Image (tube, rainbow, N blue to C red; front, side):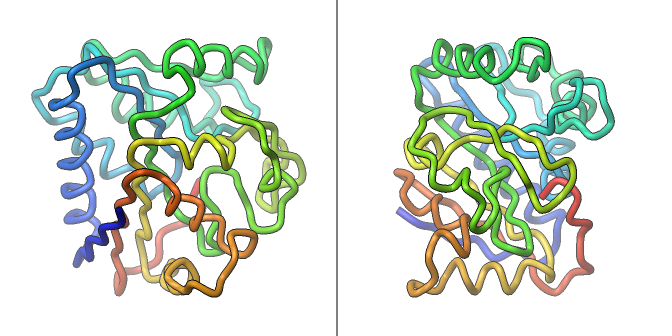
Amino acid sequence: MLKTVECTNSDEMSSATADLIAGEITSAKKQFSIAFPGGNSIKGIFENLAQRQMGWQGVNAFMADERLVPPTDAQSNFAQANELLFSKVQGIHPFPFDMEKGIDDYNKKFLIVTKGNFDMIVLGVGVDGHIASLFPHNPALKSAEDGYIPVHGAPKPPEQRITLSHEAITKAGIVILLFASESKRAAYEKFSDPEVKEADCPAKIALKARRTFVFTVFGEANLSEEGD
């Protein structure tokens, strides 16, 4: 199932996306697992969620991808999420990436907590159509592994990262895609074109999830690409 929500500005997108996330968490009958991205697209959503009075006790939060830096580093996606959301709500169980323990440790936590399936994954889409750290034509796109995988030679620094794999994204209950500024219009056009392959627009991977929600904001000033 694919649903597209066209928003007039970033505040509207942040509110509508937060409504969806909060609604799914509130209606969950069990523990709820979610993966968040980094970047500017998600900032307003974090801030919106942090202001809501809701139960976070059953929520397990991972990052959709991470730079190989300590979780306190300014470049860390976790650092942003922790500053804007995790540190401001009670009960949420966030999982930072531990550089010393590495990808195997993060994967082990992912598998134990989620049984290999996220309830929800939120992903910002880059101008090139990348999601998480799955970039067009990067070898990581071809990985058949589940969970988190290494990324080498990313076209944006740092070159070394970890990311949710193609398989992990397709197995999610819900995937949310954020096309959050005018600079993402061309990526959205590729995403919407049935002739374009995943290798050219990795955001199309999300179409294989059980439910896919697309939020767009076009016409606004471009957001920085950092983290998207």
